[in-house]
Length: 234
Image 1: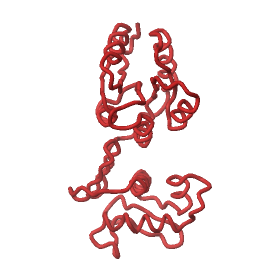
Image 2: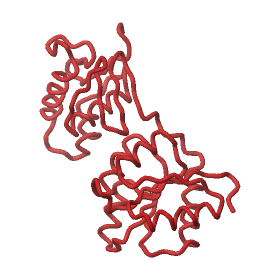
Image 3: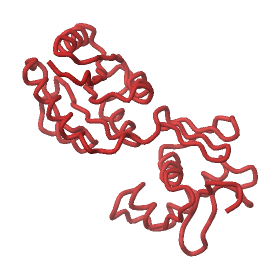
Image 4: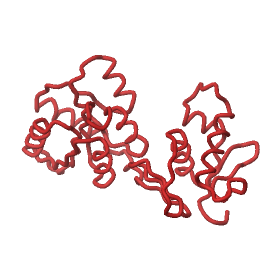
């Protein structure tokens, strides 16, 4: 039995599988919390900071790979995919999206426990996940729920706008070049050049700024890039 009472988050929609995992893990000293949807799983990951996540891919509110991508935007918790999908391309897709391991159903308890032990060992020494919410001068970015509020008012962002905002918020006060934003949001090698960044920043300003022509949050550093202010006067 494990002695550290590690917390395992199980994201699985099938009740019999959850019961099996809960009983097996509890019998070996693990604490277990459960979610049957991806949205509920993200909320529990943000509020409970589990040591390992067991993630099914066939969830009722979306594919598990998509939820994994959202989790990876703010958390480095080890994720072991548990899925009936055994094709090589499914495994590659999940691992590329940020999974640490992939276990095909059906599987034995011994193999699952071994994979969890490996995940826990790999997690040692890794910094704790960043906070699931970033707050800056009336701007609140909820990374787990993909929600943004400005002075208490919820604003709707596209996925690309949200990625840009998260990148700027995590580097608040620092100037990010057009190339840095392109590489992080669109990935290296994208051919859109700086135009994509300028267009999306302009759209983002319309949603974040009372007066987009005279921004007070999302600042332009002429000829260089953009900076999200981290205090009223800087």
